[in-house]
Image (cartoon, rainbow, N blue to C red; front, side):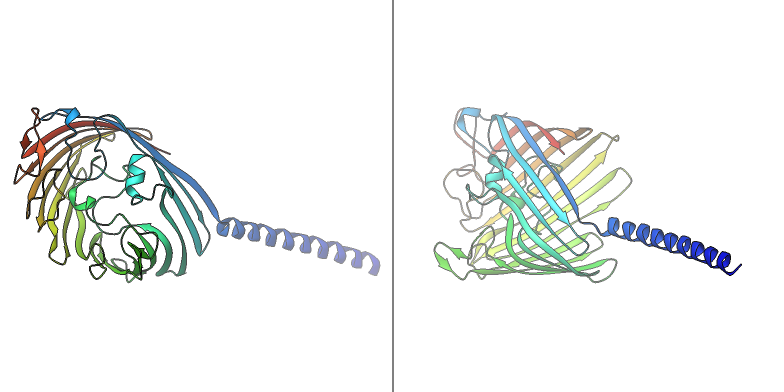
Length: 353
């Protein structure tokens, strides 16, 4: 009788132990799946066709802003992004190839690095990032997948593109955020400018409920000082208004201006939007057009863009009109003569994956 009881006890103990180990194994497996680092791969490709309406394509007339500056059939860039995300740390490698990519990396034709950084989530409210990252200033970005308009604004084109350095992001509350950074001067991969080492810059961003006030300062080493406001509001379920305003000063030479981005979604696949921008130079900044330098020149540019999406494929027809305050240093007309204005049309194709 005792032997039978003992045998039942051993069997029950074995069964209980097996169930316990099985349960622990399942829980451990679930925790491992939750904390297992995640690798993602994506990117985009884009190309376009552009023609001038008020100037001969052969004249080479183009707005002074960055990207989409070639006429005829032209390439944008191939963007390849790989990221590795752990529970507290991660890294991003963002490579850009093609004409738009080369402009984006600041002329470093042998590097092709748009972004390359590692980060550490020190706590739920604090993240440290070290490496090269796209700028926090401005409404627009380098990648055409994240912009509504295909061509870019003057405000974006003459602000920073990217930074190399260390930044700290703080989530102060559900609505407030703060970013502080120490970096090389803008768009420089190395801590030297024209062979002179030791050029650094400081940056900051204060955010509130999707509205951002941005600061940049490098002691007039390259860009000087810039303050920038970026934000927007959903005025209805289908109507959005984006806003950008900036002021940049490098020892009396720079610019200031503002842009509005109203966008109306007419269906799930089609949105139409307008960018209206005023850009005022200070001193001999020479950003507008390609003729002789005209001090304190200004330009008003209107860009009407449609965006039609099919799965990951987006088609963007775009009509743009740039009107400068002075024809001497601005654009050309169909006869190759100086003109205050330039109108152009393009259609772009963008595929994201």
